[in-house]
Length: 223
Image (cartoon, rainbow, N blue to C red; front, side, top):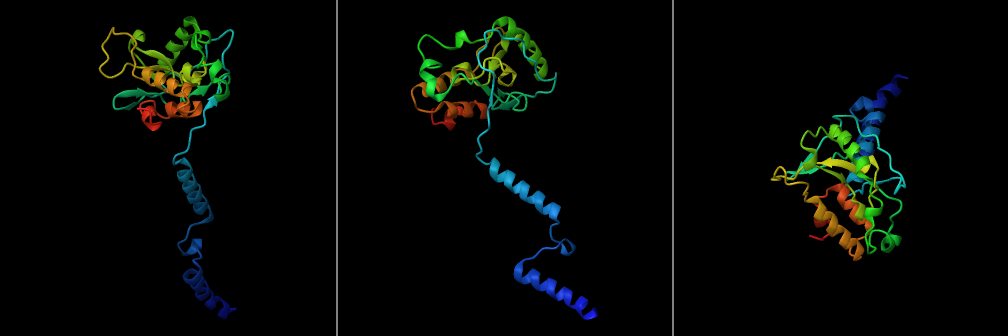
């Protein structure tokens, strides 16, 4: 028994030198540490360039109801070169099941307009806007902020899903009493034009705008 015990360090050392074995008692990773490290590495590799999964909302409704908003103060604006961006935890975006790549010509790309027929009334959105302003801690004038669809209706965004709506503050340099005039709006229009012209797919446009509306055109080579 004594000879076996004396031989064990030599066997373990040989294993370490020749086969790269690791044991917890000799400074290697424990099974728990190893599993954690593997999960972390997998998460990092999976996050690189991964597309965000976008939720699917209820779509257009004959009668809309006021939707519950995130708790007051729980959402936080982000800023890119001074431009306000939504909180992805509160406003990750949601698409309408009524708009697909296959039916673009009869929905968002049809002549005569599509969005006016599915937009919730001001009675509904007005109440939601006040609640969402509290969610984001917005204290400015309501008339200067837009209750914005993150994925716009003209890009197949869900009309009244709370995950797709946020109080968008004024742009940098915006003058009080100038009314709503956000730089995000022309980005949405250019994306819509590109989708209907077949330059990008509906999914590409939706993904680009939920990732960062300020870089959406550049990302898709449309700027």
